[in-house]
Length: 387
Image (cartoon, rainbow, N blue to C red):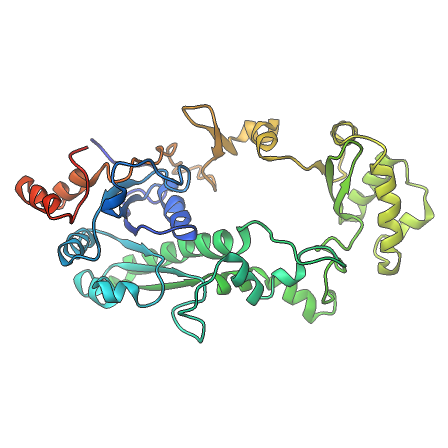
């Protein structure tokens, strides 16, 4: 079976030590962009369907017991021909397994060793448990999200796990791969979700420094405080998203709403008027349904869009035309590959593998013979049978 792949990372080999959340998201991104990613799962899971059918797409899966020295030796053998490793354990876990950076880089000095944690490899909280909500809380982002007089709102797990974690590690690994090709030396990439959340706040910290941002929620341009940058409830319970920051787009919105001559609404950047302006706009948006407003704003420059649910977003004509969401063989939508590469376009991602289905194929390619595979399986070092 051929595993040649297309895309800007074609030819790159990655070993992903099985984990959850942001680590697999990093592996998915690398696989989407053409890397050959081999995921190492636990033997006890062999033969089962992936619990994360999208996050695990595009990989090959092998099952190896990393708590056994023979299992560690198998992974080290795979790393001889690998360009990068992805792991998402707490600091020190892979070292105790015998798969820490020192052991792996001694074996393959060109290896890029990617580490994903919430708090980072050092610092007072390095060994503490946590999740996305904890990381974005401590980094300062969560305090700014939500209603003025309510509680901070949880922005799914996009800010910490995915943006500040998986995407940041994928970027770090790619940058380190470029450096390794130039220098012949690999390195450790320490991606922490607190760091990744903080760097996403660069614009907000810049606005704070220049006096254009106030502490607190719904008091600023991008936190729902501005009446021209927030959501509004419509008749029937739907919502529209308004983002008309620039004066020409703001004027276009007022024109569609029939409020172009309202003196209150001419004071776009008067923060003292924002509460009353928001109430006025809210009353008008409440007079029609979301779909009626969508039709009214269609073709304008007003920066007003419907708030869509997942199914609606996948079916929207713009997203459909670009393939923002792709349809799998069972007809269900899932996010497509991003970004786009016009010179080295990636192939459509393969479905997530059955756990361990590629164990024999991958290990044979690394030089493990049939008799050794049988012995390893009998000893419980690897899982399942021949796929």
